[in-house]
Image (cartoon, rainbow, N blue to C red; front, side, top):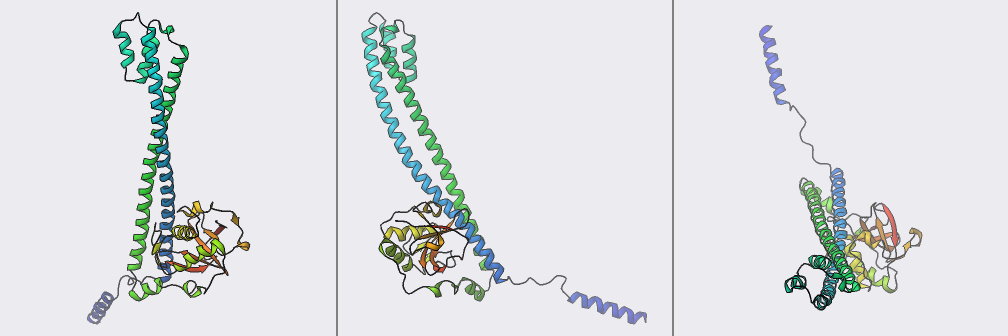
Length: 325
């Protein structure tokens, strides 16, 4: 019995060795992958729209910097002119001073030092008070303009850093989404990336619109099937605000390349009063925009998997609408 028991024990141990200690790695659930990919796409789009906002800020700051620099140059020229007048007055009013003393004032390169030398020269009261005051005022104005120039330059540097950070976020989220998709079998990946019935199969044959809205809708609808690329504004790829910007641009209406900025591009429209061509906005804070085309549908640049497509008005968290033009 002992031998038999030992054999049974050995056999049991051998059988246990054939049983996996942990369950096999489960295949990724396509619904879970789809939800994660869509979340990563949305996070990338949020960063992309912040990137677009930062680009608009940068453009404005650069224009402002050019303006304040031009103002600084004008102010410097005015200061030089007043300085020449003061120097002439010094030469006329200080005939009794030594040549070296007067010369120090006339040739002083530093405007502040020039002002200080004037205030300490003997017989300064011989100068016209208004001329001295004019120089002091112009010098203060120049200092203010130089400070404004420095502040704009610092803001530009800060905004450029913000652009780089948002670009890194876009690349990181998009890369993570691609890694998830790479884990799927080819058939599952194709099924996940194929357009859903809620999009391309619902493309209307025509959209009732008139005037500028008709031109905008016509442009947007002609792009259905084009690719979604973060930051793109055509000709064959778009992000969400790039598509609406180009569509209304075809109608002669200029819009900024930013979904949040486009929310201020026209009067607000209630959902019950929507007309084809109206811009509709999603998420809080706003990070996606599409174009209403009637019958509860929108056309929009959705995400890298879907591209430009037609889908339902409430397929995303709806925020509001505006009417450009």
